[in-house]
Image 1 (spheres, rainbow, N blue to C red):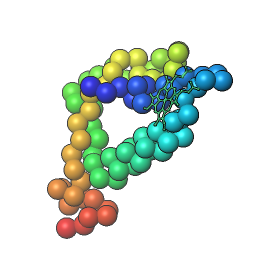
Image 2: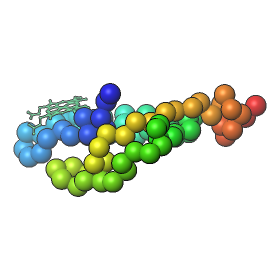
Image 3: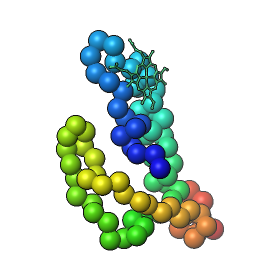
Amino acid sequence: MLHIVALTKKGNGPRNCIGVTLTDSFVKTACSYLLTHYDWALDPPDQNTSYKWLPASRPAEPLHLSFTRLDQTGSCPTHPQ
Ligand code: HEM
């Protein structure tokens, strides 16, 4: 399982990662695609959705999601059936 923090932590200070802007752009593009083309659901639905804030804002425990392609159900705005 890939945790979102693994995609966003790139260090701080004078030697921080030079790929920050590029990888942030990739993550936003991937999230945008998933939000546009898939229905997201907590799977199982009864998970702990509380937050913890340090050292980075994130769910208190890793969340498990399932994704259902919207164009397979006919409800995708960019792929109507
Ligand atoms: C998810 C993707 C990435 C992660 C998690 C990541 C993470 C990191 C981390 C933790 C550091 C050390 C920062 C520090 O010591 O404070 C670093 C340094 C660096 N990263 Fe990334 N990185 C990613 C993508 C990239 C990409 C796409 C590039 C190039 C296009 C890149 C180029 C570099 C370079 C050159 C350094 C060394 C900077 C220096 O020492 O002055 N990284 N990265």
